[in-house]
Picture: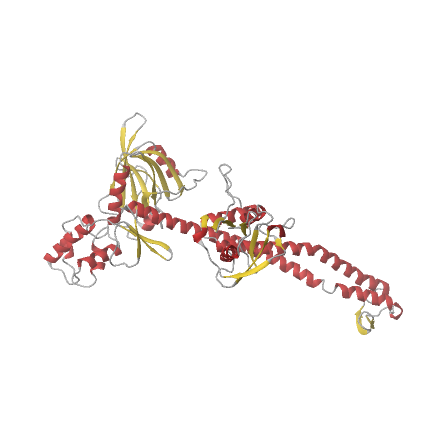
Amino acid sequence: MPQDAFTLYHQAKELNKMLAGGKVNKIAQPTESEVYFSVYANNARYKLAVSANVATARVCTAAAEKENPLAAYNFCMLLRKHLLNAVIKEISLDGFDRVIKLVFSCYDELFGEKEKILYAEIMGKYSNAVLVQDGKVLGAMKTASVEEASKRPLIVNFPYLPPPSQDKLSPLDPALAGRLAQFIGGDLGKFLFENVAGLSFQTAAEIAYRFGESGALNLAAAEKLYRFIGKFLFETKLEPCVKVGGNGAEDFFAFRYETLSGEYRLFPSLNAAEEFFFEEKDKTRTFSALKNKLSECVKKEEKKFLKRLSVISDKENDCRDAQTDKIKGDLILSNIYRVKKGDKVLVCENFYADNAEIKIFLDENLSAQDNAQRYYKKYNKQKRTLRAIAPQKEEVLAALAYIESLKSEIELAENAQALSFVEAELVAAGYLKKKSERKPGKKPAAAGYIYEIDGFTVRAGRNNSENDFITSSARGKDIWLHAKKYHSSHVVIDVRERPVTQKVVKAAAEICAYYSAGRGGTKIDIDYAEKKFVKKPPKAAPGFWIYSEFSTVTVDPAKHEEFLKQR
């Protein structure tokens, strides 16, 4: 993204107009690299985010609330000590580098006014936030390594040194014209990126494209380019926008870049565009991280139960000859007169298998009766083992079916909120460790997706908990739908004693198919029945129901957002 000094310059101007004179009412640090200031300014309340996160470094307002840790970070405590109830005097760009300077007016213990500055350094993996008073460091969000500290110490009471400058000239420096005259032809965008401070490669390429000349620059042409750069950076009319694509928000700009094609979404201010972009990016990152976490948890549990099933199967295999051992015991007693002391084998007719000849191995040190008892004991032990492992196998198979439904829920989830229900389900099942809570939170209502189709209310669950809620709260004549061969949402049509049309059933079935593991295919069979024929077995896992007296309709998956009322 062009998060360069050019973009930050205009961003700082907007923030200054919006927040200058505002009072800091609250300071929070939800993550190690993000601080949020609650500011009351111009008769409005704002939440200002200062982030040094590698992926989302920024200074802009934010709308989304984030959960704070149980114990505040040291940097948060430092900011509260120095900046709580402070007034924002000015927000500006520090020189023409990727550093936004937030100047605060504060009062000390003796009610003397002090000026403190928070430098937000927006520099990729080197991003940081440093609090400074009288030119000396009070603290930093990120501490430097020993090697880096030797070059630029961010140590309390040491002088604050700005980030080391590269061999580039500011576009405000008249000497830049002489540097530009050194261009001998070739890629002008690359030359500007390597020689003009504060420009991203995209912005440099845009300037070169709009300048329209790529040959070697004499002094007159260099002067012309110098003036063009200044006009581009400081006089171009802003048209804040976000470039969007198949994966959502891709980038944000102060105005459309002619060198980049694609679809743009316009915003009333650069701050609004930046806020939207980073919130979308944060949602995507949060969703992806949570999805990976839950997927790994489910895979781990699945592996554990598959291992248990393998052990049970091995025991079953060991007991597969149980009936044969009983037959051998019976045959030994039936042919006891044939067995002599010291015999190792008994060959006789097996009257259980049409008198086919059978060979039975004996213990030469035991009598015929004791040999028979030996086979009976082995048979009884195997029979007890089979009785013991039968409920274990049933339990493991039920757990694997439940885990399969969780995998389907995770795969079908479209946002972090849907995944949060799955996370709560994993915690309730004991598969995931419960997060520490400051106080009991309000449990979200299990409403699922709600549609309005030809006057009928249709509900679709997003997870096993919502499926249970939707199905259990349905009435006897309501129509219940579920994919025939796949894990899917439970969908219920609220009929309210009215005859439901096939059009409504078909649309509900298409929604059910969309929220099923068969979403990627076509011609999905959906079973539907009246709710009175749908029952939950005792002690069944969440989301598991059985049904009878059903009909089947074959449909293609469809989301039907045109009918969606609430999600």
